[in-house]
Amino acid sequence: MKTLILLLTITISFFAEGFVKDPVYDDLSGAALVRALLKDGKLDLAHPEILDLQKQNSNEAEVLLGQWHYLKGDWKKAQQTLASVKTQSLYFEEAQVWLGRTHYQAKNYESCASVYSRGLENRHAIESDLLWKSHCELKLGQKEKSWRTLLQTRQRFATFQVESEWITRLVQLQLVHEGLLAAIEWFTTHSSPATHFLNLAEIFQSSNQTGAALVLLEMARAQHPIHQDVNLAIAQIYFQKGLLMASEEGFQRAALTDGKYYYHTAELNRQTRRFERSLYFNASVQDEKERLKQKIATYVDANKYSLIASLDAVIQRSELQKDDEIRYALAYSLVRTGDLERPLKYLSQITKPELIQKTTVLRQTLLDCREKQGVCHL
Image (cartoon, helix red, strand yellow):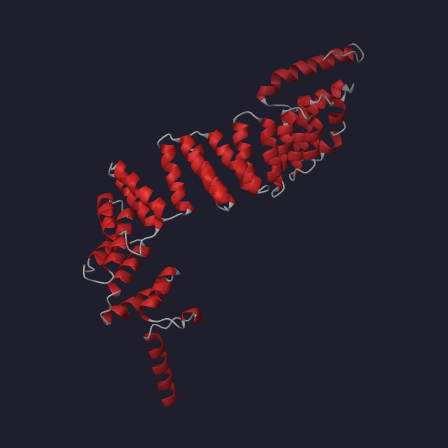
């Protein structure tokens, strides 16, 4: 009995102290422990620790509780808690920064700009706080003030987040050339992941400045030659511009990391009448049905009717035997190669409205050929 009571006492004491099981927190306690838990997103573990701090009349407790409400997405409670931190408190400036963040998230732009102005020069402010202050001022129509805040931010924080916002503003002001020069300078002086190039290229694309976007994407490809998203972005822009051969290169590189893009590569070669190259990439298309259908389309464009006719048995073993366009292509090719028997079977199965007229004409041609004992004019 005594042993059981002892175990219960130890267990109650164990959890009453707000024990955190993860050994990484073993050396932390009080406010330091709460800050680590909040930073790691362990809000359920942080809350009882904050309540303990409140019982101890800790000066940090209200700020940490406000941060906890903020991270939970309860803007109203966060505002109430952070606003209660007194001016003379050592944590007043920190509370003001978090209060500014809360007002921004709640879209209280006037309060956001006002509160941030009182707390941004302290060590707690990060670049996103200054950017949010600039956004709030912009939302209030205070364009010059917003621009000044952004300039101060750029001088204080040399980060990609700030530079991205700077370039966005330049593009919005239709200072595209200046924005592009700023982007080129950033990438020339900073080693950057492909995602940064893609992010800035998207800024220009969203303003229909595809030429500027291409400059950045080509810079990205020089540094990240087989990055799939970079190559796809380049391919899509060139395709939209009607530059199919340039687009093909992008899809070909993307296929090195994802084989599904061999289909697009082969298709662009087919459309630009580079048939041998199209068939080369077609051989790597993963989907059997797509591969066969694309091969037939390439043979049709290249007038290789005997090769289409030779695929008759293969087509009959696949789902393509039910495809009216394939049936017509096969029937036409068989007629062109002198086969006047099998085509009628395929033509009789076609029901697609768009092909009825062509089917009727081909059937009549076929019947005429048979009457003339194989003399055909297609």
